[in-house]
Image 1 (cartoon, rainbow, N blue to C red):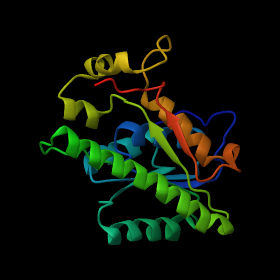
Image 2 (cartoon, one colour; image 1 turned 180 degrees about the vertical axis):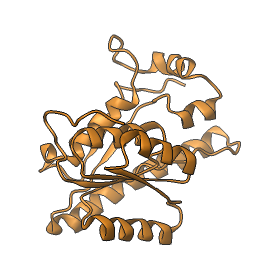
Image 3 (cartoon, rainbow, N blue to C red; image 1 turned 180 degrees about the horizontal axis):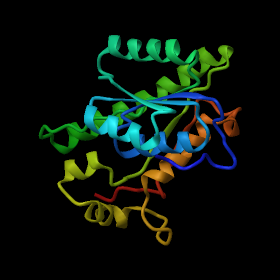
Image 4 (cartoon, rainbow, N blue to C red; image 1 turned 90 degrees about the vertical axis):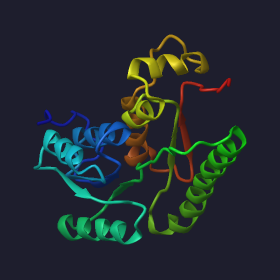
Length: 214
């Protein structure tokens, strides 16, 4: 069970969905939301066992798990509908679920796919922020640098420590330690809270000045 909420609760009585919340950045963000007074945090993930464990560790009084594959539009719709039906509202949607390709790609193919997907996200948030602004809905994204999450470590087949050392030479900030999931979660919390009430259509980089050299 988690301890009492932070003295400065930035999400008091808010209801949030965190996709990909069973591990890594999503798990850390779900915990941060609960710490800051969210009335309900819904963890949505395909990892049923891990997701349920995270929900229980946060506290079932404010956190629940729903199995959801975000590549299935009907499952996402059901996730949102069930959340609103149960809690009466939905204030925050953190679309965090990610995948890592296991197929072999040459450098050009990888770069093209990566750049197109990232710029598609930027285009999406800018268009969505424009279209949804009249309803009081803000749309932003966080662009994290390399974090030693279970997914990344699994893809590289390295421990968390080795993964961090692998990226050490490519970050500009050298004396603050390694970028951790909690740093990214803090950025998400900022964008989800009223601290950023006039921020929309923005991509917030949390990457310690990451510049790939290879």
